[in-house]
Image (cartoon, rainbow over all chains, first blue to last red):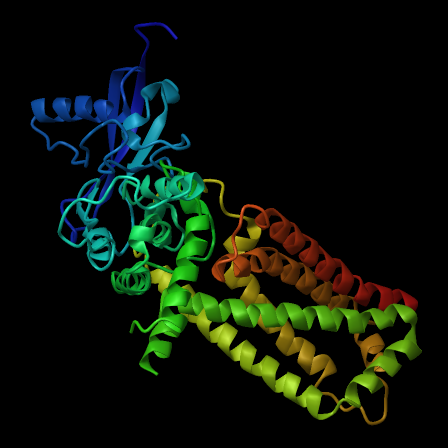
Length: 256
Length: 213
């Protein structure tokens, strides 16, 4: 690929003024986009142009732009975070698109994620789920020795794999049922696997699943779309673990 | 008892009910297929099998009511799940593509399920709720499959069952929490194998009877 490669594209981007207003796809012709740009940088260029010509810029969420914060995300041509595997939208580059391509950009769509504006959705349902149990309680006092609790490398790896979840919401966006099971399973797993998370494991699984249900997400039907789009490649093995943890909590613990 | 209602009405609890009843149906299909294979042994072996089955009396009645209960739970829960999942995304995507996780089985679960319900009603009407005093079960079956339309309906229905089982079998292990990297590939393999066995085992019966009779 040459240094100065540029492409022209047609964007069809979702414009919606607020949660209760009807939205629509707006067509924007974009010229001379460097293929070295990330998708979000391309949107920056589009927004600069929109602002200079007195139009409203396209609102989109973003923060670190290096694939680790979980803020960005949109459905690109029907794929959450775009067509590439294991990638957030900010890491998607314009060289992945052909000159003259039409790119449809839509927000995450779920009843539990109401649209705030354009591509920005309200993901506070995830915060509610975390608040209901996604933590461990620590006693105050002197810090324990670093390796006082033995944890095998295998368990540490599994916990770390689950902890890689950045809470972006792509799993919900891609799920045909709008289910949040992959997110919740990652958050339950990262703690349930480790000794520090065991004391509250039952209460955590019970509360987080019940909160998830109340937030209006759909039910998992093992479609595996979540796993396929997850930028951190969280496995549905975690969902099986969540099922176990929840059923254990219901039938074999005293939580209600 | 509040906890048990809360458990079963939760999203995972509803999946659990689908799973346990589904497992029951897989057991039923297996037993039903083993019994029906006597058809390949000819008219007498099939009639003998039916006769033997009915000597079990109360046990059969119990199994029938059990299956009815399972069907009610499976259909009711499935319907609730279908509408809840439909409601969870009020505004559809303008463009939505599969990311590679879905299969024909997983995509069509509610619809194949509904078709199977229609088939079961027809099937029970054909062979269960009929007057069997003056005739044999083989005769009823043979006269039903004299019609090409019935052969078509039954064969297609068995393909639908196979598609339903192809997702249902591995899915029930996942829901029960049995997903282990060592065993899951085998579970998926067995699921595909079972759905083929059900599809082929049941699917060729109408044709066999039609051409034999």
